[in-house]
Length: 254
Length: 254
Image (cartoon, rainbow over all chains, first blue to last red; front, top):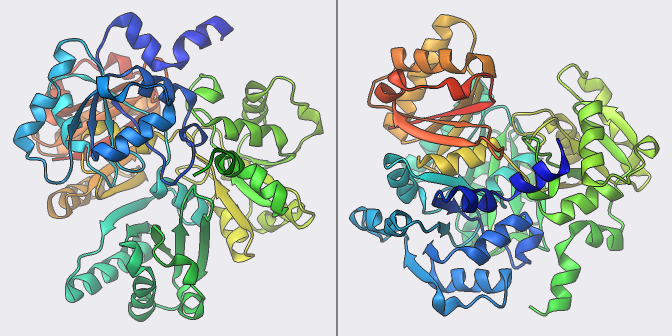
């Protein structure tokens, strides 16, 4: 490939500017308190700078993210609409209206990749129904990074979100995960609210075989990042004070 | 956070240099023929430049990637070991020996993120057993990007790799996917060899309900990237010439 071809193709926002195809960008944000350009390619920052219409999970954190991308961004000139778990699906189609006038929109969640373990998929679904151009951008995903760091099977894996809160259903969900690990060799990934991390480990130790492997990935991409894989019988006795109130992700395999 | 704190923490290679903790980096490579810095943060490139020991899926493509990161890298001075699907697991522990001498190692696959739908998890597993420091780096994953762009459920999803080749097993695997979509609302993701893309779509149209949604994401991050979600009955009649021999990923949901 010739260098000039490369330059043209590498920032997809440029390409769209030439073609004038309005695009729905899915713009990741850092998972931890680090500089945006340390966890995403520079062209994401360029897109964050150029887009005027945002659909955001949280207004305050989105403004903060944009200011960290470029302190000179005039936040007050931007159009921001909130899309969170309280948004009615009836309100979503109107959020895409700026694209009909030829504007790009960027979807920004509170942390990580929009539409993965975070709001955003509803607006993408509507954009897909209308045949609009959707462009996911590269950024930090604790699911993907923890899977890479776990040493577990990456040929097949499942992300299950939060476990059910009700005790019986929760135990049978864990048993189902155990079956899928044993029969399908499928790595099982899930999350828990940070203040319950230790309780979650204790529960896994109680319900599942001691030889089963648990990986706990905490503060992924942050200064205290720790990705540790051990059998449950070792986790039962491990010092996990470092996990107290720290965002973590859990992976099981055998 | 003060600016100087940020600067110190943002490149994790710097942090490790200070602490002198040898690290096993999982270093993603581009999925398509684009500049490395267009699909990953700059600090990945800095790590690619500084590491001397590599464990690579393919020698030629790894050299090519490093040259694109920095044409001045002296490839002949680097230590490279191959870890691919033919590697015996008995040979893996020795690959970590440089870490005992205090060197970092970077694992590099042919395309995308090492250890996810690609080799690499075996060496990570051994590193985890030995309590070595493992650091996954951010980069392009067609699985994650296509999920973001599909509009499908990102609260729970499964990646299933390739479908079984034998016809009966293949059909029952598709039926099982249908059940997991319907009962668990779990997005199902899988891959196929590029020259069979159209055959795969025809098979899905034959086996699954016409109303089921299929997303096909092709040439993800490349110049011809296309992420399209439609019901199967529309895919049945769709012109898919653009998919001929193009790497694609398939996602199902309803």
